[in-house]
Amino acid sequence: MRRVVLASANAGKLHELNALLAPHGLDVVPQSQFEIPSIEEDGESFVENAIIKARHAARLSGLAAIADDSGLMVDALDGAPGIYSARYAGEGASDSENLELLLHNMRDIPDPRRGARFVSLVVYMNDPQDPCPVVCEGIWSGRLTHAPRGDGGFGYDPVFYPNDCECTSAELEPAHKNTISHRARAMQVLLARLGEP
Image 1: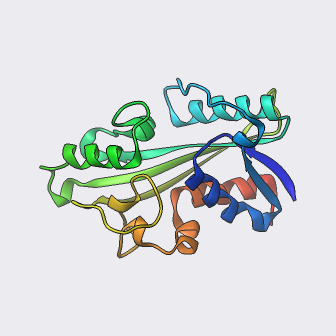
Image 2: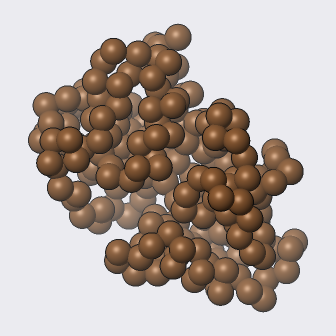
């Protein structure tokens, strides 16, 4: 197994990535194992933030790094929460607080205008000076429900109803979600780019 550091402290993200990458010989370890602190995500796009995080983790761990910057983009909110998805309700906000604010802001939006998409931008960097990091994008389109449904997943999963499903993301079996989600799509591109089977 090849060890790769994940530039995140998000337990849900670590679990998803290990499920996706372990069968391909990649052992994803969290940056917390190296006592690497989070770095400020001050980029203006998903790709900028992912590169910032990957470079930071690679530099402090000595390993190749994977960073995923992802978020929910809601059509009726002009793409918000977007890159601010994890802190939509403020720095340090919980998933439930972010979800509550999103539902509040969408309270008067009718079903035909509740389109949304999850975007995942994954960066793989061999080392902190890697001049050509591998950059992959995955998009998962759907719409927002009016109330949370399901206990699985994390983040905005309980209110995201994918176009290719008949339930919310939080109601999907984890194994199935890991084949169709935005992160899964980005990882499939990454594995192809890395030449993995």
